[in-house]
Length: 249
Image (cartoon, rainbow, N blue to C red):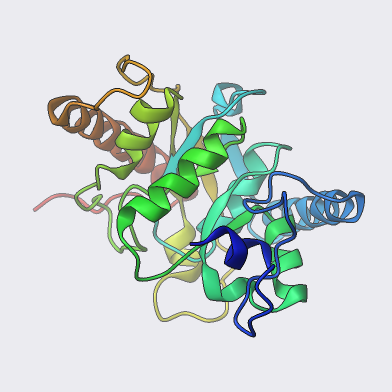
């Protein structure tokens, strides 16, 4: 992504509507801050009223500094409900095309989104995420990659572990219970199913020298540890939500 395209200086019709100095949404206007706070309360009211949201382990969420939130992913509800774990603005990747209209770009940036060009190499997304973490902001990454189904985590991608090692920030694992029953794949209207978030203790990455290469063996170990921890939290969250894992055959 060129600087000109990102900042909207080229005059092209397909330019992104992101002002200079706001490329990753690191700066927000007073209006955007007020809008985010308003939407945060809206999420809280809906989540706690309609979905009877319960949060366990909130003390594990850092109050300052950068960190990665790594939840299980079974529903489109998972993204907005994550905002309930902290008053800080959480950051999410979004496809670049969503920022091509001024109103849409303003809205998405206010809610924590930042653009990544779709179809480019993974290193573009990684670079964008590292920029966000370098700004001291919390980043949400779904380690399974995309929305999945069922009680078992799919194989985790190494990206979450790589970001944690490269940026030297902790990973906060989260299990989300009830979201698939509330609004799983193929559902358009959410059911009033109880949602439960179980937040685990932060996982610290192994030390990597500044700018140094992250050993693949370290990535594999950290990814395996993260997968085991998220599965434990996911199982606990599902049980607390009243949608426990079916008995194993």
